[in-house]
Image (cartoon, rainbow, N blue to C red; front, side):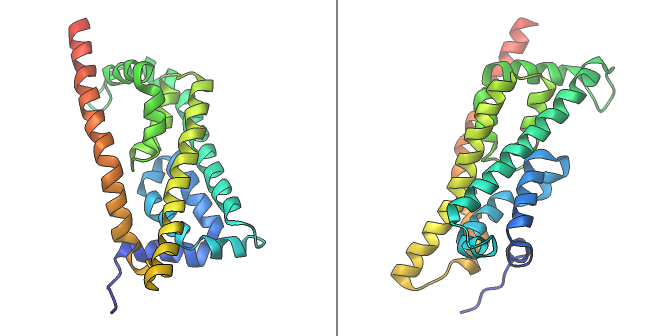
Length: 222
Protein backbone atom coordinates (compact mmCIF):
# COMPACT_ATOMS: atom_id res chain seq x y z
CA UNK A 1 0.00 0.00 0.00
CA UNK A 2 1.48 3.37 -1.02
CA UNK A 3 1.07 6.55 0.97
CA UNK A 4 1.29 10.06 -0.35
CA UNK A 5 4.30 11.76 1.16
CA UNK A 6 4.00 15.24 2.58
CA UNK A 7 6.27 18.09 1.52
CA UNK A 8 8.17 17.92 4.81
CA UNK A 9 8.93 14.24 4.39
CA UNK A 10 9.96 14.72 0.76
CA UNK A 11 12.30 17.53 1.82
CA UNK A 12 13.81 15.41 4.60
CA UNK A 13 14.38 12.43 2.30
CA UNK A 14 15.91 14.71 -0.32
CA UNK A 15 18.40 16.01 2.27
CA UNK A 16 19.31 12.52 3.49
CA UNK A 17 19.61 10.94 0.06
CA UNK A 18 21.16 13.88 -1.82
CA UNK A 19 23.23 15.81 0.69
CA UNK A 20 23.87 13.10 3.22
CA UNK A 21 25.82 13.74 6.40
CA UNK A 22 27.25 17.09 5.33
CA UNK A 23 23.87 18.71 4.69
CA UNK A 24 22.55 17.15 7.91
CA UNK A 25 25.39 18.78 9.87
CA UNK A 26 24.83 22.11 8.12
CA UNK A 27 21.09 22.10 8.85
CA UNK A 28 21.60 21.22 12.55
CA UNK A 29 24.25 23.93 12.85
CA UNK A 30 22.00 26.51 11.18
CA UNK A 31 18.95 25.62 13.25
CA UNK A 32 20.85 26.06 16.51
CA UNK A 33 23.04 29.01 15.56
CA UNK A 34 21.57 31.14 12.76
CA UNK A 35 18.41 33.24 12.82
CA UNK A 36 17.10 31.65 9.62
CA UNK A 37 17.58 28.23 11.21
CA UNK A 38 14.09 28.16 12.71
CA UNK A 39 12.81 27.33 9.21
CA UNK A 40 14.51 23.92 9.19
CA UNK A 41 12.79 20.71 10.40
CA UNK A 42 15.46 19.67 12.90
CA UNK A 43 13.56 17.01 14.84
CA UNK A 44 12.14 15.35 11.74
CA UNK A 45 15.52 15.42 10.05
CA UNK A 46 17.32 13.87 13.03
CA UNK A 47 14.73 11.12 13.37
CA UNK A 48 15.03 10.36 9.65
CA UNK A 49 18.82 10.43 9.94
CA UNK A 50 18.54 7.77 12.64
CA UNK A 51 16.65 5.54 10.22
CA UNK A 52 19.25 6.14 7.51
CA UNK A 53 22.25 6.26 9.87
CA UNK A 54 23.87 3.11 8.44
CA UNK A 55 23.81 4.66 4.96
CA UNK A 56 25.25 7.90 6.31
CA UNK A 57 28.01 5.98 8.09
CA UNK A 58 28.96 4.14 4.90
CA UNK A 59 29.28 7.44 3.04
CA UNK A 60 31.57 8.77 5.78
CA UNK A 61 34.50 6.37 5.34
CA UNK A 62 32.45 3.39 6.57
CA UNK A 63 32.49 4.85 10.07
CA UNK A 64 30.51 3.44 13.00
CA UNK A 65 27.09 5.02 13.47
CA UNK A 66 28.21 6.45 16.83
CA UNK A 67 30.64 8.70 14.94
CA UNK A 68 27.71 10.15 13.00
CA UNK A 69 25.91 10.94 16.26
CA UNK A 70 29.03 12.61 17.64
CA UNK A 71 29.49 14.78 14.54
CA UNK A 72 25.85 15.90 14.53
CA UNK A 73 25.95 16.65 18.27
CA UNK A 74 29.13 18.70 17.71
CA UNK A 75 27.30 20.70 15.01
CA UNK A 76 24.53 21.46 17.50
CA UNK A 77 27.03 22.52 20.17
CA UNK A 78 28.92 24.77 17.75
CA UNK A 79 25.67 26.25 16.45
CA UNK A 80 24.65 27.25 19.96
CA UNK A 81 28.07 28.80 20.56
CA UNK A 82 27.65 30.94 17.45
CA UNK A 83 24.16 31.97 18.59
CA UNK A 84 25.46 32.85 22.06
CA UNK A 85 28.36 34.83 20.58
CA UNK A 86 25.98 36.76 18.32
CA UNK A 87 23.78 37.62 21.29
CA UNK A 88 26.80 38.61 23.38
CA UNK A 89 27.95 41.05 20.69
CA UNK A 90 24.53 42.61 20.06
CA UNK A 91 23.44 42.70 23.71
CA UNK A 92 25.09 46.00 24.72
CA UNK A 93 23.62 47.76 21.67
CA UNK A 94 20.13 46.49 22.46
CA UNK A 95 20.29 47.52 26.12
CA UNK A 96 21.32 51.03 25.10
CA UNK A 97 18.73 51.30 22.33
CA UNK A 98 15.68 53.52 22.83
CA UNK A 99 12.20 52.04 22.83
CA UNK A 100 10.29 51.93 19.55
CA UNK A 101 6.93 50.48 18.54
CA UNK A 102 8.77 47.28 17.58
CA UNK A 103 11.42 47.13 20.30
CA UNK A 104 10.79 47.44 24.04
CA UNK A 105 13.68 47.33 26.51
CA UNK A 106 11.38 45.92 29.19
CA UNK A 107 11.31 42.63 27.28
CA UNK A 108 15.10 42.40 27.57
CA UNK A 109 14.90 43.09 31.28
CA UNK A 110 12.27 40.37 31.65
CA UNK A 111 14.47 37.98 29.69
CA UNK A 112 17.39 38.83 31.97
CA UNK A 113 15.34 38.06 35.09
CA UNK A 114 13.99 34.88 33.51
CA UNK A 115 17.44 33.58 32.51
CA UNK A 116 18.91 34.43 35.90
CA UNK A 117 16.32 32.12 37.44
CA UNK A 118 15.57 29.53 34.75
CA UNK A 119 18.49 29.86 32.34
CA UNK A 120 19.94 26.40 32.95
CA UNK A 121 16.73 24.50 32.25
CA UNK A 122 15.90 26.85 29.37
CA UNK A 123 19.12 26.10 27.48
CA UNK A 124 18.68 22.36 28.02
CA UNK A 125 14.95 22.11 27.27
CA UNK A 126 15.11 24.52 24.31
CA UNK A 127 16.87 21.80 22.33
CA UNK A 128 13.64 19.83 22.28
CA UNK A 129 11.44 22.76 21.22
CA UNK A 130 11.26 23.85 17.56
CA UNK A 131 11.85 27.59 17.00
CA UNK A 132 12.85 28.14 20.64
CA UNK A 133 16.12 26.22 20.22
CA UNK A 134 17.15 28.72 17.53
CA UNK A 135 16.72 31.82 19.68
CA UNK A 136 17.44 30.56 23.22
CA UNK A 137 21.27 30.71 22.88
CA UNK A 138 21.08 34.18 21.32
CA UNK A 139 19.01 35.48 24.22
CA UNK A 140 21.43 33.83 26.64
CA UNK A 141 24.22 35.84 25.04
CA UNK A 142 22.21 39.06 25.06
CA UNK A 143 21.51 38.81 28.80
CA UNK A 144 25.13 37.73 29.41
CA UNK A 145 24.45 34.32 30.88
CA UNK A 146 27.59 32.89 32.49
CA UNK A 147 29.67 31.25 29.75
CA UNK A 148 30.62 28.13 31.71
CA UNK A 149 26.99 27.51 32.70
CA UNK A 150 25.81 28.04 29.14
CA UNK A 151 28.45 25.68 27.74
CA UNK A 152 27.64 22.88 30.19
CA UNK A 153 23.90 22.88 29.44
CA UNK A 154 24.58 23.47 25.76
CA UNK A 155 26.73 20.34 25.57
CA UNK A 156 24.40 18.18 27.69
CA UNK A 157 21.32 19.40 25.86
CA UNK A 158 22.86 18.87 22.42
CA UNK A 159 23.96 15.33 23.21
CA UNK A 160 20.57 14.40 24.68
CA UNK A 161 18.62 15.97 21.81
CA UNK A 162 20.66 14.44 18.99
CA UNK A 163 20.96 11.06 20.68
CA UNK A 164 17.29 10.73 21.61
CA UNK A 165 16.03 11.66 18.14
CA UNK A 166 18.56 9.70 16.08
CA UNK A 167 18.65 6.63 18.32
CA UNK A 168 14.87 6.71 18.45
CA UNK A 169 14.75 6.47 14.67
CA UNK A 170 17.51 3.88 14.49
CA UNK A 171 16.17 1.43 17.08
CA UNK A 172 12.51 1.85 16.20
CA UNK A 173 13.26 1.12 12.55
CA UNK A 174 15.33 -1.93 13.55
CA UNK A 175 12.60 -3.22 15.86
CA UNK A 176 9.79 -2.83 13.34
CA UNK A 177 11.85 -4.43 10.58
CA UNK A 178 12.81 -7.38 12.75
CA UNK A 179 9.31 -8.10 14.07
CA UNK A 180 7.06 -7.14 11.15
CA UNK A 181 9.47 -6.80 8.20
CA UNK A 182 8.17 -3.27 7.72
CA UNK A 183 10.00 0.02 7.15
CA UNK A 184 9.16 3.33 8.76
CA UNK A 185 10.78 5.34 5.97
CA UNK A 186 7.41 6.18 4.43
CA UNK A 187 6.02 7.49 7.72
CA UNK A 188 8.84 9.64 9.06
CA UNK A 189 6.74 12.79 9.18
CA UNK A 190 3.79 11.34 11.12
CA UNK A 191 5.96 9.50 13.65
CA UNK A 192 8.21 12.47 14.29
CA UNK A 193 5.31 14.90 14.75
CA UNK A 194 3.82 12.47 17.28
CA UNK A 195 7.13 12.32 19.17
CA UNK A 196 7.45 16.12 19.13
CA UNK A 197 3.90 16.46 20.47
CA UNK A 198 4.48 14.01 23.32
CA UNK A 199 7.81 15.53 24.35
CA UNK A 200 7.02 19.23 23.97
CA UNK A 201 3.51 19.57 25.42
CA UNK A 202 4.64 18.97 29.04
CA UNK A 203 7.56 21.37 28.57
CA UNK A 204 5.36 24.08 27.04
CA UNK A 205 2.88 23.59 29.88
CA UNK A 206 5.65 24.17 32.40
CA UNK A 207 6.98 27.21 30.54
CA UNK A 208 3.52 28.82 30.49
CA UNK A 209 3.20 28.50 34.24
CA UNK A 210 6.77 29.70 34.76
CA UNK A 211 5.94 32.77 32.67
CA UNK A 212 2.86 33.47 34.79
CA UNK A 213 4.90 33.29 38.00
CA UNK A 214 7.61 35.38 36.34
CA UNK A 215 5.14 38.12 35.33
CA UNK A 216 3.69 38.16 38.85
CA UNK A 217 7.18 38.67 40.29
CA UNK A 218 7.77 41.62 37.95
CA UNK A 219 4.42 43.24 38.77
CA UNK A 220 5.04 42.84 42.51
CA UNK A 221 8.53 44.33 42.28
CA UNK A 222 7.42 47.32 40.17
